[in-house]
Image (cartoon, rainbow, N blue to C red; front, side):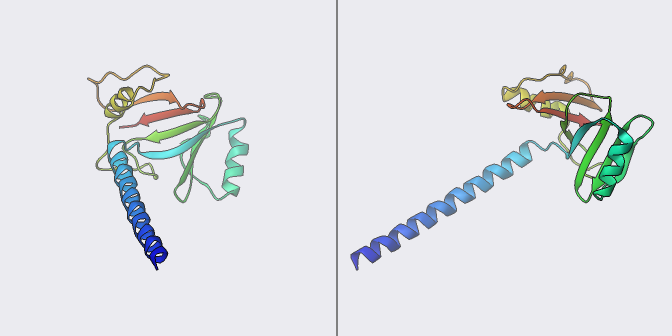
Length: 159
């Protein structure tokens, strides 16, 4: 009987600890989301032939949302997934965030300005690979950084 009580007591303690940790994780996640809203996410892909890539992604169900074949770039969408295909514009692929936009390229009412994002990133000790934005400016601007594995991240505000 004593063992059953100990097991039950242990189960109750573990359940309470699990609830506490899950609640704490949820609070931290929500704080991070509020603190660093980066905007719409897309992958920017370096492609060899814009027309071949356009056809390929259309066969996967993507449709053209924006861009120009003449300028050798397209923004394509499949439900909430966004990709940009770019020919001869940059090396490698880039993770892209657009503050102020939703996944349809539409303006959102409230967003974190890129200068504030830059300040928070800078305060965290992450280094930029692009020139920093003058905090006294406003409107469109962009910054670039690399993650620990060398993946390039572009934060590109259009308004």
